[in-house]
Image 1 (tube, rainbow, N blue to C red):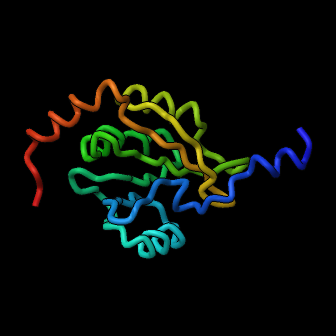
Image 2: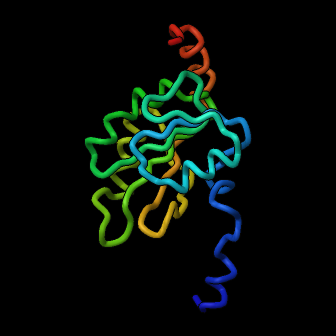
Length: 150
């Protein structure tokens, strides 16, 4: 592919839009030490927390350096809105310590599917995991009957 064609395919949308961070979204940051992410969230006036997500969270950003970090997926999935997403943020390129295929296998094992990849920064990539459409009604019913923390 020519350089011109590659340049035409590069998105110029702001990262905040690529990640689906909407005004008023409930967001949790789990171990991602990125200041730019926090700045973007404050600009969008999103409701965000550090650490464990609140119930009915729209977006969860999970830092993952190994498959052990992916063991949090079941608990994070339980905190998601049915149409929410977990962004797994990991190193990319030669510095990568986690392969996309490992994230995808962990997602499938926990009732999630991957449906988007975004370059998070010069050093990190992010893979979006969502609850499959066919399972969203059951997830909504299960989370509606779960005790709410507060």
